Amino acid sequence: MPIARPEPQNARVIAHVDMDCFYVQVEQRKNPELRGLPTAVVQYNSWKGGGLIAVGYEARKFGVKRSMRGDEAKRICPNIQLIQVPVARGKADLNLYRNAGSEVVSILATKGRCERASIDEVYLDLTDAAEMMLSETPPEVLEEIDEEVLKSHVLGLHVEGNEREENVKEWLRQSDADHQDKLLACGAIIVEQLRMKVLYETKFTCSAGIAHNKMLAKLASAMHKPAQQTVVPSSSVKDLLASLPVKKMKQLGGKLGSSLQTDLGVNTIGDLLQFSQEKLQEHYGVNTGTWLWNISRGISGDAVVDRLLPKSHGCGKTFPGPQALKTIASVENWVNQLCDELSDRIQSDLDQNRRIAHTLTLHARAFKENDMEPQRKFPSKSCPLRYGTAKIQEDAVKLFDSGLRDFLGSQHIGWGITSLSIAASKISDLPQGTCSILKFLQGKIPSSTSLSGAGEFHNESLPLSSTVMDQEIKQKALASEAASNDIDIIFQAKPLKRIGSSVGKTKDVRKSSILKFFQSSNSSFHTMNQACERSSLDQASSSSFPECEEHSDLEQIDEQVGFSEDRIDSDGHHNQTRNGYTWGINMENIDPSVLDELPMEIQREIREWFHPPKRANTSRKGSSIVHYFSPVKKG
Ligand code: DCP
Image (cartoon, rainbow, N blue to C red):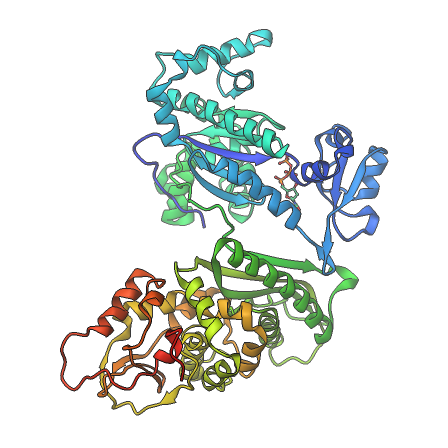
């Protein structure tokens, strides 16, 4: 659903930068002999020459389009060079293109807030840079303006033939323009500089739109391609939208756009102007109605989100027609391959960017054979993500099994899978300090002891259903899952012991920062451990099942992963208890240099353990954590 957001009060300068025929450019850079030749990149599946996924501009002149297959493209452009997308694990491998996109992003991100919107497009908020230019070196004082900036298209500016560049120059330098237009002029100069830098450093061309909001910038970037830029002054917005077909607007390509056409007779965005806000709200609800009213006037307050890295990682494969997968074995084979790729990607995200993903989701498209009822959708299923290829594969297969059970219900009929995809989402930064302390611990704790500790938390296996009856078990398992992923890795040198619920004083752990830290960093410890001890942990957790959920319940699942109690027992040991399990911590021998590597809030909390506020019946005898934290003392 679109969300209506009002424009902020002060004018912004937003750019949308989109690479030109991106995969083709990447292939041409790899093989410069292709430069200047009509070129297209085709899918892995080579049926009828393979489906075209990227078409170079030289080939477009012959009428070659993305919807064509290689054979058809060859018919209308016999010299076309068809390059097959790189292949790995039996499917397209997009890493070459992803990495090329990252090169571009790192250049674009130097001038302002940068949001990577897809593999080859980026939004930039250049407001600060434009304001600064306007106050320090406004275009009107510039002796010269780069020729490339003068090639900009300024919507609403009447330009003819040879005077075009002169007119653009005049527009850029007009001293009597309003502040908004002056900012856009600065934006145009900044974006051109960035585009030139991208070209110089990566050899890629890109096109851009420069406007006061994301919606208008995106519309504009596609207006003049390749290697050009388009500016949208406020005075041109009405004309731009008046003739824009509704389906061209982002979020209106689907059902909502169709409804506007059939139910309201609206064909262009400009047609929406005839409806009052109330009328639109009556038809589409308050939020969507307001959004429609706003966009018809070029109003869109969406912020450029600071994001250089993808929000999630996903990989999928389609199995059209006769290729549909009809046995569990064939599905497992593909799930395993997809998981293999996903695992590599989240691992390199972790290694390169120190980010961890928390949720694993499996989507599929399926059909039932001879099913007379209307086809049900195959439900998407999710579970907490455990790092390590084998675990991801194991969990994904279980998600599939669960989805298939729901899909088939009580029917015993044949089925087929026409597409499979898995995704790792809920990605967050690894907290500072986590890496080094875990490396330290890795070096100190023999893997065999880690097994004993982890094992105690992992022997509850779960049914995959998510019935209410299972809630309690589910909570335990999720907690257990979190424990195996997080804390028991740190405190695992000794087996966790069970203590009675009456031991010690209790406090609500939801208020505890260290527990919040452990909770929010969820699988990070597990992850780091994994890098060194994959196999031992696999063994340790082999009996645990992921609890899976329909996709819509992701939020709920994350909330359920938590701790139940946090205790100081009567011997002065700090005990963390979850679902009846606890471990004892005595702090007196913790090496302070190790503490320095923990996040500040955790350091504070642990230091408080060193010097706890006076309380009755607490002492600090009976160390156990010393074995895990101190590099010098053993046993
Ligand atoms: N892509 C794909 N399958 C699609 C659409 C696109 O694999 N159905 C890939 C190939 C494209 C890249 O994504 O090169 C970027 O897609 P764009 O829609 O931005 O198109 P191009 O960059 O190829 O061309 P243009 O210059 O028109 O933006």
